[in-house]
Length: 92
Image (cartoon, rainbow, N blue to C red; front, side, top):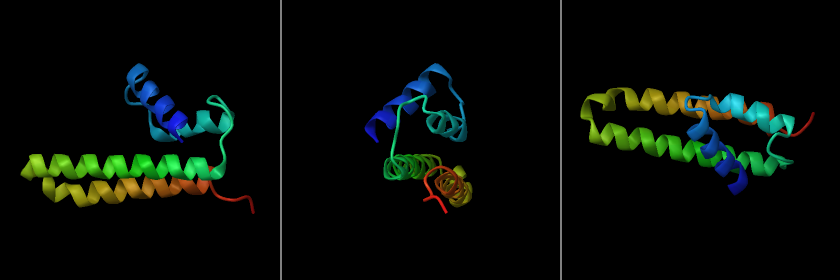
């Protein structure tokens, strides 16, 4: 998971604004080596925790944003859940 997180952070430095889904497509192609479904789950849940913490910190620092924070958290969690279903779900 650390190698995925490092690769994702490096991508964000090199190509700011790259969607998480685009990164996961690269992971699925094997651009960052082979990873187990559990490693993908761990990575995506870490990104989810980081994202939620960032949203909450911004809302605390800027009270005018607080009213939108819950909606943004729900959107972030929905995106992660969709990525988990697509890339880390056990084969049926």
